[in-house]
Length: 446
Ligand code: HEM
Image 1 (cartoon, rainbow, N blue to C red):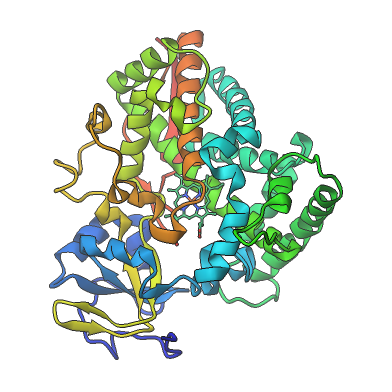
Image 2 (cartoon, rainbow, N blue to C red; image 1 turned 90 degrees about the horizontal axis):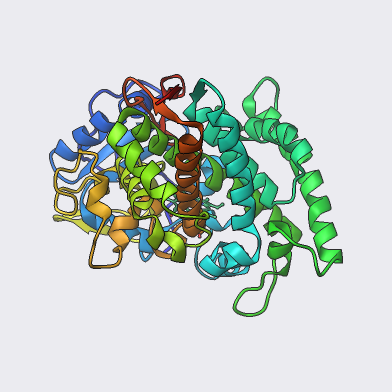
């Protein structure tokens, strides 16, 4: 069934509206500054469906039950409307905003470097190790660091380096990309001084250069790196990606793959800095082992670092809510939610489900250790689910654990410890991250 063109809103579907919304901007400020309270409020709303309004996105019906996770399967939902929010960054052929056969084509042809084997074969893990070790080395020689700034820089450098951008140009690529990221804010008109205007210019700059990398890789069958892998990638029918598809998906990969992982790494380091016992366990595990994990298969040697990753993600999922548009009606407790409704899947609430996680608000990395079963789809809900389950899951997992093991070893070598008076507060939407200034930590001899 086709999605309706008229958006469904509280005027056409009479369900509770979250309190505290403001005219025009809606609930955006509540979500940005008080994410935890806002999700708790949504949970307590009368019934499992509650409207929120988010400027730039419109009305979203948040479905607070665990069953909302099923919407990720895209049986009665579509992902294509995601393009409305971020077209300037992800274009029209990005996998995250495609359904069905188009999605399978884009995803399969791009997936090679992101599989557990692909991470090592394509050189992604080796690049991650090089960048992380260099950044951590520089970090531990200082007396004070802003953790979020450090992890953002590391994650962005990693993604650019695997695209083949030389170290000397990382700064300017970072600047152009940051300008592009601002594009979705405000009206989508290419007129100064609107962010969209500067974003379109930055995109032109980036695309011109990326086209050069793509041409280079097409002409050289032995070329290495992410761009070459995307040029060589094939879907199940043996069809490759066009230049346009590669460009849109490269921009998506930078978007999806750097701030998310940077955020979780900053939370992990913040838990170390505020909790000496956690820090000592990370250091003890890191110094008792050699090498850094290169694939998920290596994780067995770093159970505590992995547990810290899973618990930090659970408590602070970078993508706290992901939306889908209904293509067919959804029945919930006798209410028929019509096709065309934008429904929010609250990953934040799924991550604090008391039946899955006893004492859900407590930081307990131990809950992930010594388990006798594989992770269930709900336990990895921070990466979505179904056909759009995060393509970079293995990369993010290896990157974050690699970072914390490298950090543990460097701290031991320097005889230093991270210190922070309290955990940073959460800055949320569009991504959950620690408040930048509050993520400042001291490095003290200890
Ligand atoms: C902790 C880190 C990360 C988190 C929490 C995260 C989270 C997510 C989530 C929730 C989705 C689902 C989107 C949807 O269903 O609409 C997603 C999709 C995606 N992620 Fe990640 N991500 C992370 C790291 C990465 C990395 C490192 C990369 C690659 C460099 C990446 C690439 C992607 C791509 C390409 C998609 C779209 C997949 C598709 O549509 O088939 N992500 N991610």
